[in-house]
Length: 121
Image 1: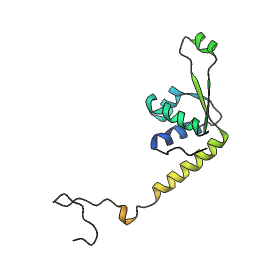
Image 2: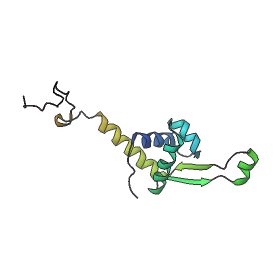
Image 3: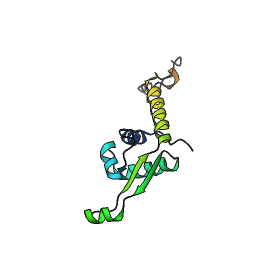
Image 4: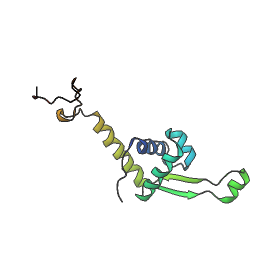
């Protein structure tokens, strides 16, 4: 089991799933909760499922036929996935709170269009 890339979009999907870890949610519901388009949500869900953080099941055909809509696939964060997701989100949050080291700070460009380095001028 690996670790998915913790992009901002992945973090939003994980937070949506962690709102109620026992609840099964379908893709468009997750799109609304995370504020992301379906073209972004579904690849993330597929990656989370590959690493074992998310399980999915298809809706019973009778339910969607009776409702007159397409069949839904429901996603739920696994128990282990919830633990790992919380840990990964906490690490991501902590890393953003750290100040950038001096060498990583963005320097304004000089008039000539080049960046100045400390001690170079």
